[in-house]
Amino acid sequence: MPASAAFTSWLHTLPPDFYDQLAHALSLHGMACAELLSRPHDELPHQITALTTLDAAQVAQLNAIGSHAQLLQALAENPRRLYDLLLVGGLVLDTSLAVPVLAYVRSQMGIDNAQLATLKQYCLELSGTFLGALEQQLPAEPSVSLHRLRVEAAFAQYVAANPPAAPPVATLRFTDPQLQMMRLALLLVHSLPEAGEQPFVRAVAAIGPLQPAALEPMIARLGQLQPAEALPLTLPELVQLYQAMQVCGMAFVSEVLGTLGLEDALPAPTAETPTGSRRQAVGEMVSGFTQWVQQTFPDEPALHAARQQVLALADAL
Image 1 (cartoon, rainbow, N blue to C red):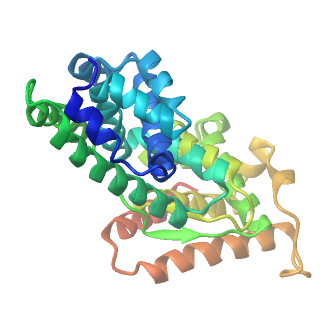
Image 2: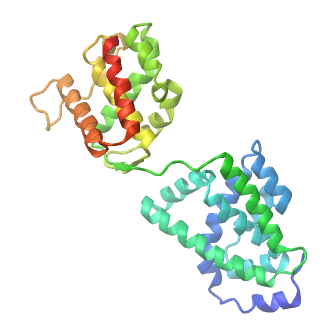
Image 3: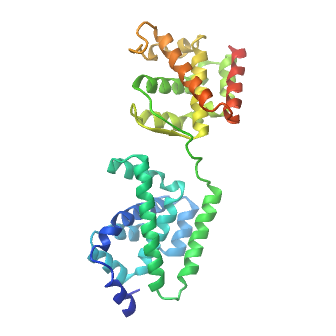
């Protein structure tokens, strides 16, 4: 729908560098919209397409805007389409749907999590201000306010059914031997079902966070993690690593490592433990990590319950 004369006049009041100001927000919101529409099996994309008529082709076209002149042209030709891109993109950015988008931006720009959070907040504030200005200029019919409420209601339903992940309670940075140890502990626990029907194996398999499917996301994260890179952990993730390390330490006093063929996978002693054997070096890393967790979260009920579960495994060895 072409813009009215009044709207066209308003467009010419935008400063010549307005696209430069909006570029990051436009790009981030566009990627968020594209991520949403790339999930054809989910209900939310269908709801949003029905409410806004946005589709992948339109989003790709808007994402190709690369200058102030192109931005003005897009607004002149169909201002509601760009309005919907910014509205929907901003709502996506406040859901778990944005995780792959933000991870991509972080990697491409070479920034850390704090800088990423600052960039996201800046883009949301800028787009929010521009959306408010657009709402004042768009025709009253059909109602922009009612349209926005319907779109926001669709996202509210999605968030209620898919609550955001818990915030991190700790951010860890592992040395290379520590990272190897964490990977080994998870690999060991993941492989335990292959060790047979020993009481210890069955007891470990009964612990929900240590079941193979539950371990795989953390195994994937640690597989991509570099030494000294920040690893934010939620409480359930920290408890999972704590229990995995405890089980790994208990396996050292049994024949489980040999049964699984993981004896040679133990990290070699480092300069920190020059006189120790492999088992001694690993034992020190296991105890160091688990003691740090216990001392850092001494009153955490979830950790206390996890510790009791692991202690109960001793009876099965």
